Image 1: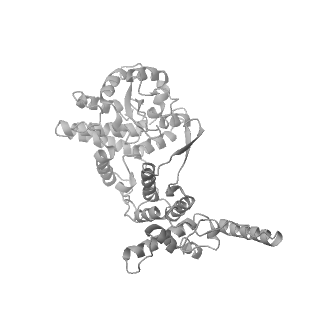
Image 2: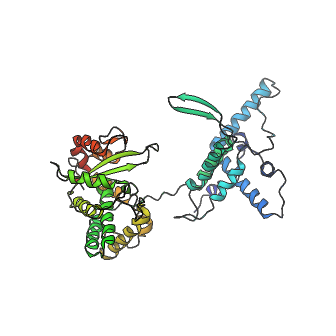
Image 3: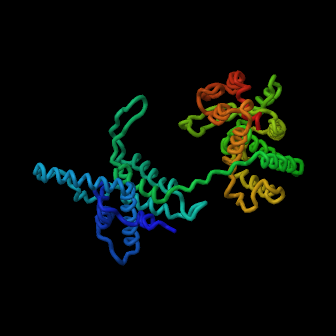
Length: 429
């Protein structure tokens, strides 16, 4: 049964909302935007009036009922003390009227609300994070316009605070966005982890597909898929990071590393990665050639090298025109087909009622599976520090991570000092 109080949430205002959140009526907001009164026979005007009411209520519900009630009581005390005890003619600031222009951002608020009604990918409507991009886009255009920020204040180091009149940074708009987020909520859809038994089945099927593949192109595709899956599971990489492997250095460094006193595989990555502030960087990622459970990284590395030796592409994962591939667009459907085959033919690994396309993803399923498996490993094989070290590989303190001014061979040589520690995560799988 639905709580009656919850059912009324976001549908009406509370006594005292206007004392804590800026308020203008629907008609005033309409006049501020359109410079005229609404026409009842115009469908667009009526839609606008409805959306304005929704935006006002969202701004009110950025604050909880208790906060509104306590603030109202405090305001009453201020008024009683000021006028009754001290006889002040005026103790509270004026609440209106406001200027006859849309300085609060109601216009763009209507756009954000309209965006929130678009069809979602995994739900009936889009998520809040998708709708709020309208605000970011408007703010970007404002910053590029004649109204751009002109006054800046240095706060500390390289951080700057700017003064702006952009409506999307007004107090009312901040309250509106917070209330809208509270009303819409969030539906998180994290990729389900691929378990070790499922990953073993995936690699067995890929091995069969490789031997059965007709033609160089198909074998090359399956070989890349095998490398991608093991890179996510044994290395903890996200699916979209693997296509950043640099072909030339991948071939050169793996020929070297597989002859090392501790034979292992190397993934040389280059590009702009998450949390790198947009700066292109080089990374060297080391993975054992064969894990405890039998995941054979060396096999798939050598297969890929065989098919890529005559290529001239910069990135290992490139299409026929030399453009870097997208893991999601090129390989995710293949992953789904493998998982469905396992679901149908192997009892107990993937529940029959599970929707594979909705539950798994090439981006994080392998990484989440590898991390979960490492957490279950004995401490002497892989502990929390090893997992943190592996999954936070972008931090500048880690050996082997430098700005791209260093050559790959220099990074390779420098990171040899931490080789045993680097391999613990993949060895325990």
